[in-house]
Image 1: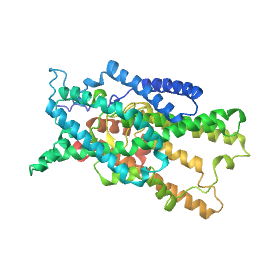
Image 2: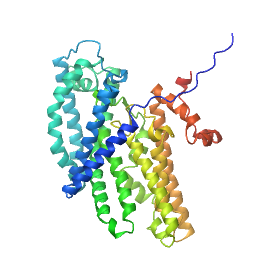
Image 3: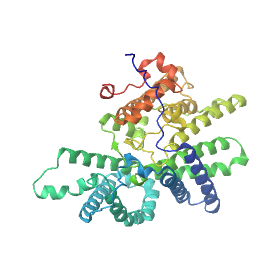
Image 4: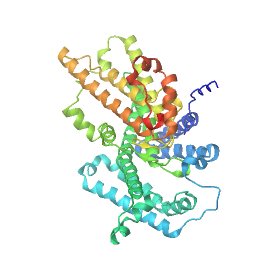
Length: 432
């Protein structure tokens, strides 16, 4: 019999909808502009409330239009009556309390969190933390009645002291769920404070650049620079905070390898300062604007390319909607910039650094060579981030299909054919 021809690869449907996310971003920015006009001295509060509006709009779209809560991946069962168990919910709340206690203990232990830098986060926590704690028991009660597998990471972790008191040890599956639970919360505990502070800084930077527009100079570029990062960080804060099964935006699993964690965390403060200052400093004070000061046409084109790269970077985060997060799997994004590349944010960010810092322009050829080598090493770190992400996301068959589709249809598919080392290779377990 003749062989049945293989079905052509198709791009999987994205877990979030890029078009609507963009509309929500526009609404959030419009609200933010109004807040900055009426209350310009509260950029941190303004940024967070704009983020809440964006999250509300996307959440309503997810629930009523996409009906994400009915996705099989949500783990919720809608075909039977809800049957929450009070004892189980109480154990989960104990698990939540223990988890928050560990994170609070880490904040108290590490001096990094004792300075003034994180004060905006502590203020936000006082405002939003109490309502979330009040809502938690009701959400856990509702969720427990719908979960197909209600003995989740919260339950496994919450019963751990009881097991120890009885001289028992958790099963291998229980340990796996606990480790995944704690890893997911470690990601939130590290990134939520950082992104909360950064979003307020970028809102303030965009506002100041806007006020400086009549004076010309770099103000337009500075405004667009801060605006793109404001958009990026609004969706970062939303993503790290909204890990809810209600929207199928929960953490499926966290990065399982030490290498994956290392190359991700070293790209963020406080670790990046150490890496950059002591090992990989690629800037020497000469920036693109100074270099092209006498060439207005070239300067305009350079700025246009830079803003385009930064826009791609911001839109890559917008594409995630409620699901943005480093080091975790929360659904596969396949539209927006991810229609053209598996790693549009990394590509655009790394290219922008070359254009902003111009490491190849220096006081001497030796310094230029050193700067370029250092930036290439940082690019290499992002290449490792991309590879470790691909490896752990490949546990999801949807991601494997998407990555194989990008191999053939992505923007750099031709380059991948010439350099096979750049092409995605599925795990052997998938091939077999």
